[in-house]
Length: 364
Length: 271
Image 1 (cartoon, rainbow over the protein chains, first blue to last red):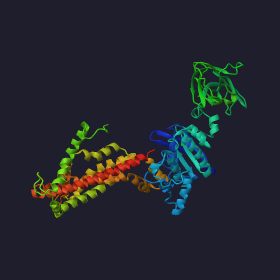
Image 2: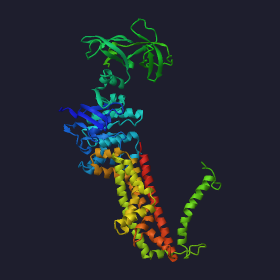
Image 3: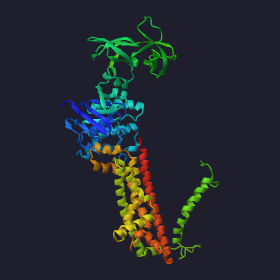
Image 4: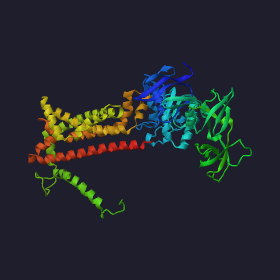
């Protein structure tokens, strides 16, 4: 058992009838970490979280929290607390009553508890809101109360089940920053469930990407984005262009891939592939750099025609046909200068990229 | 729709509403009217104002005894049926219950069986089992009748609030029992109050089952029915009827007010 780990999943599976929601998951979460479970809906991330909270019991395997096996402990005897997706603020209690709910058995004196509640109201930036009724709170305020109610218990791990999903975009971004600051300040491990990849990248120290009950990859945000280990992860996190290719040669530092569309690609790759292996060459849309004038040097650029474009304010998305038989390639361009000229459909465009932008992934 | 229209130029809907309310309430209003009328005969023209029938009502021990019987049965039935209704509602809404549909249907059957059929069947069953008729048998029948009403009220209440409230209670350190008392019960309370008042009223007003299943100890509706045969007793019965009408009206209005208040709290606390 690793002393650094606060939660240890050991071969955890959960089935509901014939459906396997979580399929032999093993990994650990480190003390003080902001850890996210990321995946499309139905991937098993919420079930995994609910097993940590104790609302579901694993069909097999064991979950240890701080070294203690937890599979048979009821939710009220676990050193974790949860922020629910819809906050689950008790409607019959005011803010103070909600926050004090879990402190009945704390043994604190009334004055001590009152002071503690005032401190935590300060912490969540709702000082003076103690007497507010539950139905008088806005969505963002409910979220803060739900946080306070869980944090006052000083859990070893705070579980968050898509807590920002119900908030509008601006408020969500603000809460993301506050959550992150709160987590660093309190030094509590956060286990965060989300389907929003941007949110996961913004908040997390590490992210576990889940699909169909399995954990596909666990990595830090930039590694997940820049060097994903599988096509699913590359596709799920951000947008990605995939090109079919075949390995020509590989030495200690470089690998050469022959592709139909891009020509020969030479890039770095940690993985070893035998010559002839079918692979994907993956390039992020923002790493394809478009230009609309014919380049001076031939052969350094890929020529295509514009199939469609979308103007998004801070950036533009272009869908470029390199070869009409293939899917168009997505190109993202930052709109660094003010421009009022629209891009014409079917106009020529030349793309360039640096070799290091290409990611090599296994293709079956 | 017709907010600016003067009231003295009503449209079709207005006339319809007035006729409807008249049809419902006019006969009922004769009760209090004649209960204050200084005549043994229930006929126009009215004679004069009197409280004689009310004092006769109060000085009639067998009538008051019947009233006490009805209140006793009503209270016990209201409490028991609400407890059973609450347990059933919790089972139906909170657990994965195999055969949920048929079970609920089975509990709801007394709602659709004519009371006279229910009364006869129970009478046959009870005499076959050699159980003597008493207030107990009436109470049992009323319980049967009231549980589905109680369950209807409470199921809608239980379904109306989020299950994660109860999970939050567990998550914050309370066991299932304390979570029920500290979370479920207060949230369902308006439904419980509504159920208590509704089932009390149903039991209190119920005649057919009580008629079949009571022995020498009548409930109030049975007593009233039996006293209708004696014209001299009728005005006092009217006084009692007016009193019951007033009490029922107050109770049902209060129940509805509590229920709506609960619904409003719930809806304003939605996200």
